[in-house]
Image 1 (cartoon, helix red, strand yellow):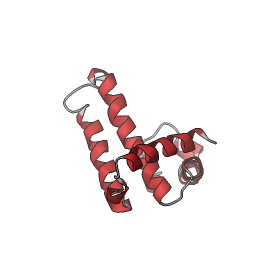
Image 2 (spheres, rainbow, N blue to C red):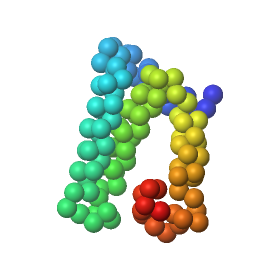
Image 3 (cartoon, rainbow, N blue to C red):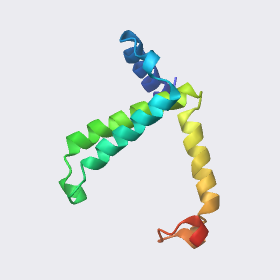
Image 4 (cartoon, rainbow, N blue to C red):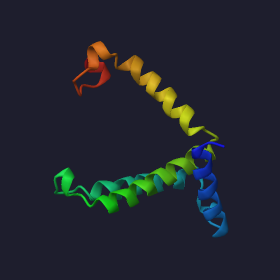
Length: 109
């Protein structure tokens, strides 16, 4: 069993013990993911990155990842597979010879 599946199984067990699956439809998982991502962003508001509280960053990042894993599971997506596929697609959109050292979007390269 992969580490990702261990995480997903633990999240689902936690959720199921509390009868929260009823709230975990794809729409609400996506909304929760966005809210948690914004809570992560808030830790950096009006600060230099180094000033963000590392422990709070870890907590909010864990929340973001948890909802992302649950949403991926809802759509039966393997996390490793979809991330590696996206890296491949991004490699095609951002070839090293054009994208190295620049933050330009692929259509501006």
